[in-house]
Length: 329
Ligand code: 13P
Ligand code: SF4
Image (cartoon, rainbow, N blue to C red; front, side, top):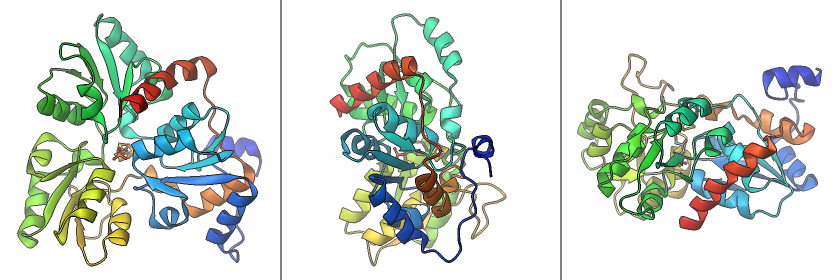
């Protein structure tokens, strides 16, 4: 297949010899190419198992800034690979499938943010890391769900702030800091599906279970949760808590690491509140995260495609708010 077809598809679509041990070959290629694999908790378990580092978006950004490896394969979504490239511009950042986007990042276009910003002089722009490099280039400081409160607390109490694109996260930070940030009306299609009713049904079946929810969930879901935070926050809570059962309102990929590191504890993923939410359905999964497969990781390492490229002028501006976040958190 010609490279132009890879470009069109956004990934290398080459057949892989079915007789090879894919996991062993990926590790061999990593060694040969001085590459590391970074994986988000929402990727499939097979990818988490072969990764050098698995983490939430904050930990992945930190890792990208400090690694010595010449190449990083970012198994997550496109904005995460962009963040790696912004923090390590001299390194090769491979993204197994460029079409692994993010509905939240899509909910804030740079041109719309620019217009909104121009209409609100004197406001600082704080953006969630789930944004494009072009949006970050218009941003004063980035946050992740793992550090949003800490970063916002570092701003003077009377600072006027535009916060985007995740409305639910911004609304939660407003509620815990007493601020009145102007909120962008964006959201994640996965986390918006969770409902208090679905949590209530699970809680009736497992009355001892602790309810945990990601900060991208809607306010009533967060109000029903005893633990609210990033994926890493929920994982650390489950690891350190004496409780044995947990109801988890986030993308269910995180259950792989929860079950691996918490033997004997039970984790119940919250189903989405839709007609599709039947037992066994996968409709609370992030289809973008699930575009990362072992085959694509193998091919991206083998062919060195697709690699992330960012327009240098955009990159120069976009890295500043990420570095500001890392210095504050
Ligand atoms: P974390 O910051 O918890 O890794 O979440 C990232 C994300 O995309 C959640 O949907
Ligand atoms: Fe984006 Fe939602 Fe997928 Fe996270 S779960 S990567 S916010 S679409």
